[in-house]
Amino acid sequence: MENSVIIGPDALPALAELLYRPAVSRVFVVVDSHTARACLPLLEPHLPANYCLIEIPAGEEYKSLASCEVVWSQLTAQRADRHAVVVNLGGGVVTDLGGFAAALYKRGIRFVQVPTTLLAQVDASVGGKTGIDFQGYKNQLGVFQEPAAVFIEQKFLETLDPRQVKSGYAEVIKHWLIADADAFNTNRRLGWLTDDWTPIIRESVALKQRIVAEDPLEAGPRKLLNFGHTVGHAIESYLLLQAGREALHGEAVAAGLVCESWLSVQHGLLSAEELDKIETFVFSVFDKLSFVLMETAAIAEFALQDKKNAGTTINCTLLEGIGNGVYDQPVTVAEIAESLRYYLRLQS
Ligand code: GLY
Image 1 (tube, helix red, strand yellow):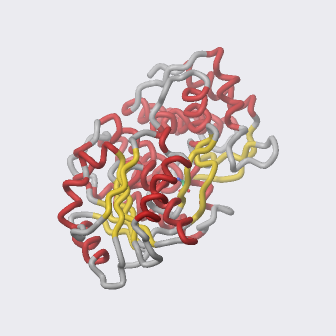
Image 2 (cartoon, rainbow, N blue to C red):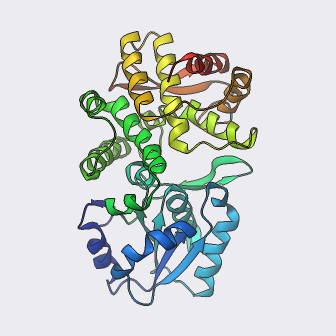
């Protein structure tokens, strides 16, 4: 079971099997104030009676060093040893932060991910990226550390606002755009609403696992997974830090998918017809984000802060046709600003 991803109705019973092993000295469950209320009741029957709950407030602003201290203080107070297991129950904030805290405590104790949002199920919990935000920059501190296992149960999605589910869907679309043209074409016809997310999650996780297995530390092909994120992160950071307006991660990524598809056309890699298909699909799911022409230059500047850039070159992932991402494509800040202006001109 180590390092595996278990998806579907067997997931929580499989977690229980791992946690009840004699080699596990104590179980610590990290939740936020939302998952404590909405998700813990579904998990609790699968936990040992003496588990210890660690709660942080919900929200990206709590993906912080202060929240890590809360986790480390509890582990220390309870004398957690190297055989303790941390169970992270939540969205990307909890799985990233809980993984990071576990990876650093006593030079690393085992942790498992129980992602409760679509975004965390198809992306954040898979692939071993952990981390926290620092001084306004997203994921500024972090380590690559694979969880002992990931357990995915779609029932948790019922606890979410549909806007949150939609946000995760942006990562699913991204996976199709970089590596699965057939899935993109089939699903853009079907639309985004479904009662059964498990097959979509399974497919998306398998696709991400294939890419991560090839390049766990993001030296090459894993950069494909950043498609939509150069512009997406820039919009997300700008709106939060400069404008005091918040967009959900996936909403910003959806805008990034459109902008970076447009950049792919400018670089002669994608056809105008394919761009049109992408835009039509993205806008059938997502509303247009609200920023104005005057803000585009400032948003583009934020792209330079991305950790993945060398000097002032912005290395972007673009599409060489739908279903075929290409990484390390240099783009300028001016081109990014122009892509944002293109986005603003589109009718949603
Ligand atoms: N979320 C992108 C990655 O895991 O590499």
